[in-house]
Image 1 (cartoon, helix red, strand yellow):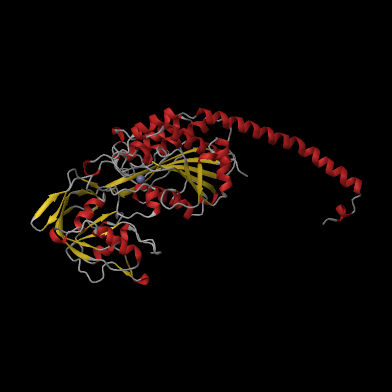
Image 2: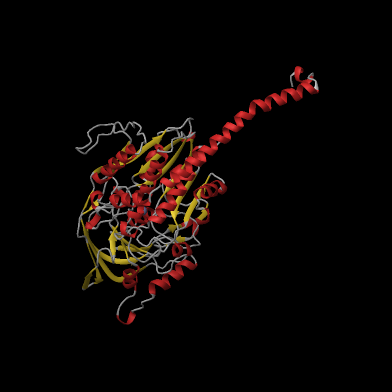
Length: 517
Ligand SMILES: [Zn+2]
């Protein structure tokens, strides 16, 4: 301590303290006035949110004009340009992003720099209309129904093949855990059939791509995969069905195999056998055995399949869109939602209204409200519309590899996905924050009683940010999403009240995080 302080008389200390308090008083009053003004502005912004406008934007994005917004397609870029235009019109600035050495492949955009567009080249698979799968015994085949009985895996290579079907359990090989679903069986030149997911006791991580590699390494020609008839509690809660689902396998071209997701019904039928040997519950029995303990249930079935389709894989342009409301400080927060979906593979149209035109419409509506709020946030707010989410988060990984603002000064990432249908509650996954922070925004927005707060959720564009050490909040509307990855995910199924609840919450949370000390 400095000598002069030690020598101060008590009265001098009191006077000095009084002076300090008097100097600070107006500052405190000013801060309070600021936060009152802030609060009123927030209430006005909340009132300005329009569920009709959000529903109209969901309808536009999931309409035929954007063709299902497949990553890397021209529809991806056109929807990006539409969104960039909308952001500009609500007063959001678009930063210049250098995408060199990229050459844009489409005639409408020869420039190397597009304002607000972050792009990268990706191989873009498209399966031609009218694929065919036939299944049956050696002398009698039946044509399976596209959409109901099966969907090709949408980045599957071309197929023109036939083979015997071999069941290989969950298709897992992990000798350290005593699991070899291929033990004692030769699958060379066969078509393997494996269940999706893994048994609950298995602690290792296994991806679909791993399973395809195991099959390929053992000489399989192709694969079929299906959800087993026994669901775990998480799958039941999420409303998982036996329907085939839109899906990308995400394997490099030199490791991929032709494959299809078949319905649980068709899988049961293929394993039931025929004649006197027939056992309709065989797949259920096999899954029960597989779920109980490591055990090999691999066997040749007496069924065959033939797979026929053509896949073109040109290079395409993946496009994220970035908008910004500049803050007074150097730090940033991000609100993101993916815009991409599955497009029109195999002649089917996947509109992607809930997934995720809904989240995109929420981001745009929140941007509109914040653009008009009339106050500058402390932190810059970045709005990011990701492409490539359906392809294992390619767009959000592109962003974290080339961030517009350094990730070290990115203080939060809010992700919105599937915000259009459900039970009216919001499922909120929080990492890197106290849950009370997420709850507080619910109070401001008047939706606190609708929040179900959890920790980390796997899957979604928040994951690359979480991995990079950025705190994240991910928001999904609660309850079952029955049209998940189906052609029936249309704007008619969207509930505008849910869009409104999500937008109120996101707006309050964004403003709170953008002004947090
Ligand atoms: Zn999806």
